[in-house]
Image (cartoon, rainbow, N blue to C red):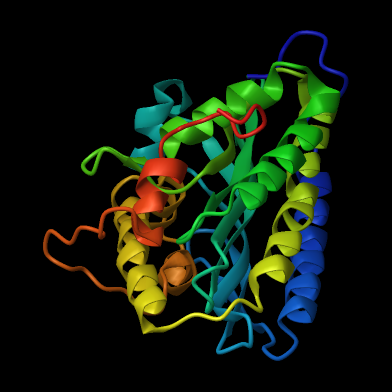
Length: 311
């Protein structure tokens, strides 16, 4: 809940305006980076309240599939995934909005990227509203490059720094823990930032932090895309990419809070599942060749590490 002495009351319209603008800016930049594909847009309404704006691209020069979605839903009762997480929310009406994106490149040397920023507020008569921000961004390489991982985390740290020296290490650690496939004992990628239930700076500064994270995504991702898009690859690399995409699917369908909340709250299924990659392989008990490029992903990149300190 909001802390005593907060600079101002939560302004959900202000957040919505920012999120719609963020979606537009990100789509424009990704279309320009691809140079061929364009996002198609579908607006949708949720019978129980609210709706969204889904934008999806496919078959591009760079991006095999990607989506940048805005949603704004509301209702009288929280879905189970949210009420179990915050039992004190029972009996409150809710409003949730956010931008969520996943970009799946064609070239296996370009990582998949994911970002999300969101705002949640719950109200009931004669009580202070309960609100928070959440989000972050994370990187899922198929073939690792240390300079890409360092750059990604440098941008993440720079976004956090104005809000406190402890913010980046806290939310980097949270990201490492969150994007982890427990049933595989394996990280999904090389992390980044993840935060939720964030209101500790009061509304204005907490909102400013969410904006800093949202604005940093393009700064973090596009230089990596440009660096790797021209690298030649063969069927071996595409096969490994499809195998690793299976891990992405497993995480999103088993653990991801946003996917569970969207499905349980009656969101648009096509928009929620746009995060899934277009082609995926599952091989039984497949193992990479020792000392191969594929093996290096497991030994040098997926184990949690401090990318800024080189260890």
